Length: 88
Image (cartoon, rainbow, N blue to C red; front, side, top):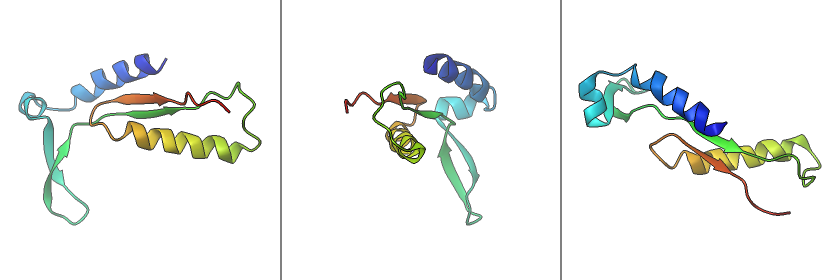
């Protein structure tokens, strides 16, 4: 499912940029300080937390783990997903 989401996202995101931006691997935009800056092309990061294992006693723990996994996925400039594979 994650591969399908990433594939579909990449098709849509690619259509947002000009050929030169795609070749460069970045686009130029204005940052929060009002300054021009180079930004990497859009990507999506997904953290996958299997919940069929009963290692969670509170929904907040699921959210916490998902945030941790998403942070790992975002370390890449490309669209990526990270699946938690830890055992209890």
